Length: 450
Image (cartoon, rainbow, N blue to C red):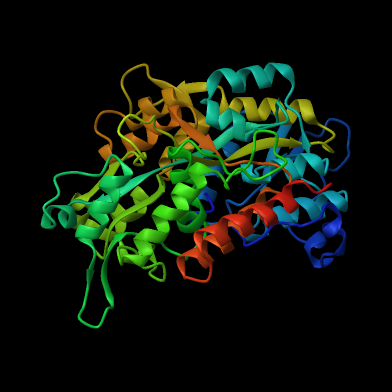
């Protein structure tokens, strides 16, 4: 569902709008067909194509359910799903658009929205849909689905970041509960970290990991937001990480590595479930995976808000997500938007909840696969009183999370940030060098004319 779940965020997006034209023609011949498929005979239904990364398993089945329900109850407009793996999704959007073969309905990672809008792929939401989205979703979800002040789609999956803790490891170190501030975080990380006599890491106090974007960039940006900082400036034309907040985050992570509390070469996705990591910042999707992996040991897992630098600081964290929007080239935008309203905004009865409780079809879909949407009211209904208490901090974070910047160069900027963070963690760059290099590289990327 997210880049942090089944497939990871690719190391880079398309670096130019016109790069799509140079990609292999095989990509043009596979996957979804043109937006206006059908026999062409009078009276035939309109067939809308929906292209997503829900290519297999539970996500594919979860999406197909409501699509089948729509098709069974709507004669004039039918929807057909198509899917590619997440790592191919951005390329597929761009290539198919260049070839005039884009799907009617697109399901992009919100990080890419600026690039897709700049390339003329996404259509702004009509006013009545934009109003419904603005009214129905949290601020971070709306911002992630918007570019230049215009809303471009209905938010689907929304992931917020929080602090996972192994409570057993904390107790064994004499610590009563999760850290609330950065000084407490450092102390807890130091006290829970363990090495053997040869210097090999047995337990990371705080799980820094170069494994993927989620554990490298995701938790760094969550800490940056918690410090009141931002990765990209409000106007989207330059990086804002070379700031007091950015320096504080890089300093914190550098100290954790140098002092032996963190070992970035460790894959936290394997180490945390095995009891080899005391704390790590990650997204809410992980709770379901941990429950399945850890069995009875999952009782040791606790989740708390991302620590802030000082006791009086306001909470903030990172949110990532996807949205469903309409192709600018679709011949049937009105029908496509109506399907999206039915899927994402229309409330239906929830059988498993209290009598008379309702939620949207998309929220039910996401909860069925262990995820969330940006509709806090839906999440409260669907999660209910008997749900995993570890999900509650992620739901609460919808109110104060900060979305990833989605400027046209955002994907490449994220990849550049990751490289510099990893260089800092592995001792190849100092804090000053990492901040300076990130600023120079990212400024060049986001300020270019796309």
